[in-house]
Image 1 (cartoon, rainbow, N blue to C red):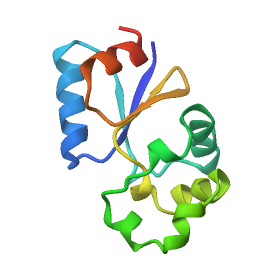
Image 2: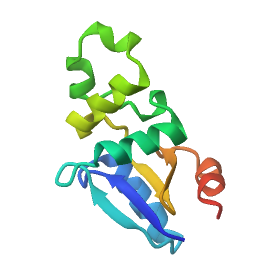
Image 3: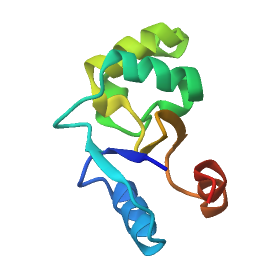
Image 4: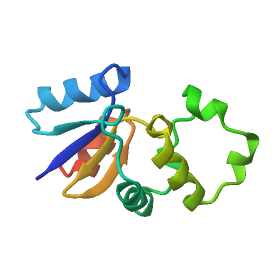
Length: 117
């Protein structure tokens, strides 16, 4: 299994995910979205897998700075926004064998199911 975890190193939720993965001896590759933002093609594939709504970091400053029109944006508009500002992406984002399978880190049962552990 190839697992990439996209996020930023100082994100509290990402840190929890990294600790959980390490405690369960799950190998992963950390992808720092601040230093190396994902490509538009990557984001487009993620949106196909997960949809744009779950991928939105609605608690971040970048999201709050967007106009109210964001409420009516299409997936394509969100893909463009994510590609222009990776801080709009909810963290962490898990990509297993090239396919986005999960965004966020809350419920261990869901994580096990999505990562097929």
